[in-house]
Structure formats: C-alpha cells, structure tokens
Amino acid sequence: MERKRVSILISVLALFFIGQAVFQAALVFPRWAKDYAPKKTMQGQSGLSPDQLLFALIGFRELIAGILWVRADSFFDTGNYDAILPIVRMVTILDPHQLDVYATGMWHIGYNFTDEEQRSDRRYIPSALALGKEGAENNPQTYEMYFETGWMWYHKIDDYYDNAVTWFKQSHEKADILPARKNILSVALQRAGKVDEARDLYSSLYTRAAEAYKDSGEWTERQNRDTVENNLDTTLVRMVQRGYIAGQEGRSLAPYDVSPPFDVGFSVKATVVDPRVIRFDGTWNVLPVGTRIRVVLKDADFSKLKEENIPASTPAGMQWDYSKSVMLDPPKTLTYMQDQLFVRNRAFGRKVDMSKDPTMYPFTSDRYVLEFYYNPRSAAPHIQDKFSWNGEGMTDKNFLNTEIREGQRVIFARLYLTKDQILRRGEWQDKPPVVKTDNYKDISDAGTADVILDIPSLRAGGK
Image (cartoon, rainbow, N blue to C red; front, side):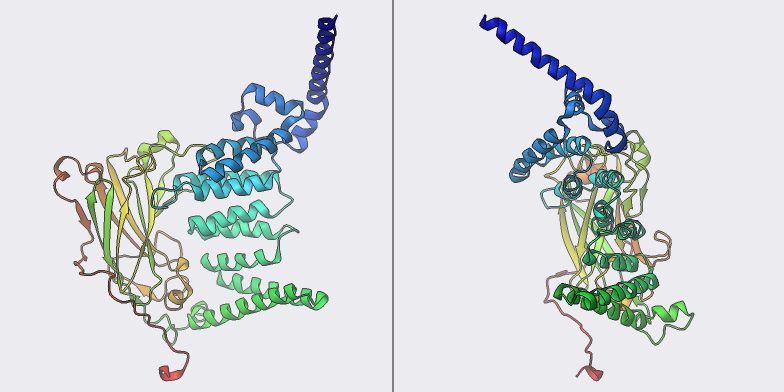
C-alpha cells in the first residue's frame, strides 16, 4: 500500500512537471523570447548543455543565474579567475538584464587576467568589448553598459578615442545617467581632438548644473556646478595657451607655449638578457617627469594568424573590436605584450620579464615586432601644455609620424626580433641579441640620478 501511494505521488509530480514544461514552452517561453531573450541565439552563444537549457525553459532561469553568480563570489575571493568566465557567460544568457554581471564581467575580462608582473592579457579585450555591446543591446533603457564600454576604450585601450566618444555619447542619451558621469565625455572629446565640442559640452553642462543648484540649493548640486565650472575655465585657458584657437583661426603659433616645437630626441635599445626577458634602454629629452612611452611586442605577421580569426594588427595596437561574440579563451597562438617605459631624467630603463607566463606569451611565430609609441593625447596635462592635444609642440628628427593616427603628430618606431632571439636559441644561446635604433647611444646610469622637476612659475621672472 505504501509503495502504491509513493508511485501515485511520483506520477502526480511528474504530471505537474510535464504540465509546467508544456505551459512554459507554449506560453511563457515565446513571450520571453520576444521581450527578454538576448539578441543572439541562446544555445549557440551560451554553450549550455541540453539539460541546462531545459531548466531555463521551464522557469528556473533567474534562479540558476542567481545561484551561479553567488558561486562566482567564492571564485573571486580565491583568485580562481578562469572559473568565473563561464559563469559570467551563463548568467548573462539566462538573465540578460543582469547589469551588475555584465559590468563586472567586462571589468573582470578586461583587467583581471594578468602576468606575474601585473601586465594585462590584452588578448581578452575584444571579448570584454563584445560583452559590453551585448549588454547594451539587451538593456538599451539604461546608460550603464554604454558607459562601461566607453570606459574600456577610454581607460584600458587608451587609444582610438573616437570609439570612447561614440559610446559615452550614447550613455548621455539615457535619462538615468548620473550627472558626475557626464563630464568624462568632455575629456574623451579632447583626447579625440574635438576640443571645440568638449568646450561646448562643458558650457552646456554648466548651464544645467547651475539651474539644478538654483532649484534645489543642495550641496551636491553646488559641488557639481563648481566642478563643471572649473573644468570649463581650465579648458578655455588651455585652448588659448596651447595655441589651439590661434591654429583654428590660421594665425601663427609663435606667441604660444607650443612654439617652437620641442625635439624629444627618442632613441631605444632592446637587449634579450635571458630567454623571454628583454631590457629596454633609451632617451627622451623631456626633463619634467610624467612621460610614459608605450612598448608593444607582438607577432610581426598577423596574416599567419587568420586561422584564429585574428584580424590584421594596427600600429602600436590591434583591431580591438573584431570579436562578434564573447570568447571564453583568448587566441592561444597570439603573443601580445604591452607595457609603459617611464622616463626619468631624460632617459628610461626597464626590464620586461615574460618567462613566467608561457601561456600568455606563447611565441609561436618566427618573427616579432617591437613598436614604441607616444601620443600626446594620452599625456599628462603638464606635458600637453607644451605639446598640445595634437602634438603641435612636439617633433623628433627621426621618429615623428603623422600617418598612423589621423590628425595627430605622434612618435613611432619599430624594431624586429626573431623567435630564436627571444628564446635565446641556436646562435643566440651564448650572446645576448641586441636591436636598436640607428641614433641610439649608450647611456650610463639611465634614470638613476635625482629627479628634477622644471615647473614654470606663475609669476613673471620666476619670482
């Protein structure tokens, strides 16, 4: 009798389960697919197994998503970052309106994967951008994912600022954007060379902030108004002192701080001191501290990487937004290292060790390129006060380049190394490979003397 009751109970539960599944599949799922589902196909993008998809279809999507994201916290705490990626992917598929997961996932993918010297694995950036795009498409009513994607371009990629401007502008169109987050668009516009537009935006933001403070009288509104006013005033002063307005009007730049252009005197030598360990030494004839020269090491022939769907590289970078989907693994055959060479006392010296991270730096190609890049648009304000936004106050006898970044004067140089040189194999086993620019001269004690800051006084005569 007891077994019969158990059998009846199981049968009833099974009927309820099947009935709910039919109800969900016939009525709930079509509505979800129309109004709430991600824009891409569910199974194709998630990698979920059939049983996981079944759970999603019968009404457990949000429950599973919540449980998975709670589980991700423990992986964050223990530093098990690889385990978080599939969780991020499954949660955003199961619940495409989880903004925190999208934003945290972008940050995690773009920033958390690093080598032993805390250099980010930039092979992940295309996936971070793809996740941001998907988050924006699935949540067009809010500014958050537009802002986060713009921030990835502005801060992490720190180049091609027009892309940051595009995303920040879309975030401005949303009613819920926070006032304090509107100012970053003006800075991005300046980095994109659109200084007039940046000034006009500051002016517009100031008008709104002043009205908001007048209406409410709240301290936070006053603080926002004062901040925007200070930003507007600073921008106007810089536009004059850097000769920007004069240049726009076709007048001579002679009376302004950018004239005459300063020769930065760039030179560099790269020495492979050990397998996968490169020492960089060079010159930069700019006395105030604050200069960071970008160095990139990557495969010289990207055409050999087409099997991995990696597009052609760009000077001092790559086509960051090529990925149409969120990849859980980066291109495994690609080597891409990026670091900063910090200038001190008109010289720099830095050792880059890639020996502890063979997965991040696989060195599968036969030839590699070293690219050295300096863009005034990324420079600190006190350096820009001399060089301006587009590099009008900067030159170099050997490496000034006006082609690789439209409308900009940048410093750009290339050197090449072979795989055998980097790995210290064959003829290079007993002698360190050295490549250098033709104008390089050895410098003793590079960057070891006391730092001297040459800061102009605001008073006439320096008194």
